[in-house]
Amino acid sequence: MDKKAKALALGVILSGAFLTGCGVPQAVMDHLATLDSQVAAAQSTADEALRMAKAADHIAFQANEKANTADELARMAISCCDANSHRLNTMMHDMQKK
Image 1: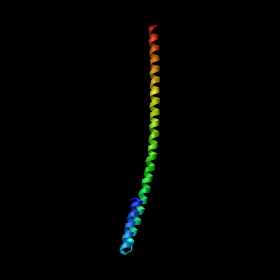
Image 2: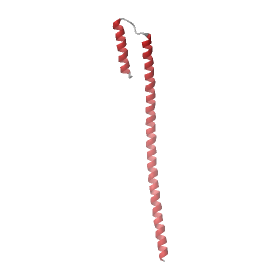
Image 3: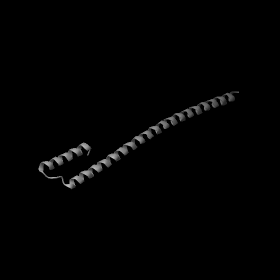
Image 4: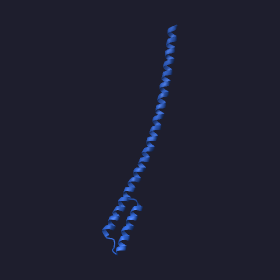
């Protein structure tokens, strides 16, 4: 329950109590205080979860960038090996002609 809803609920309870001429029972006030603390704890937990999710997203982004770099380096290494293999094959072929 957000703050607006809690304030509205408290307002309805207090208005009803005022109009009927009776006070708000302490049990109701205690329950509202308990609900308020539970909502605050839930909000704190949600805020922490959001912070952790953002951190995880950032780490995943960095890992993806590193993976892309590693993939590019691997492709360059393969290309270099292919070029060296082609040169060696050409040299061997030329040596066999003689």
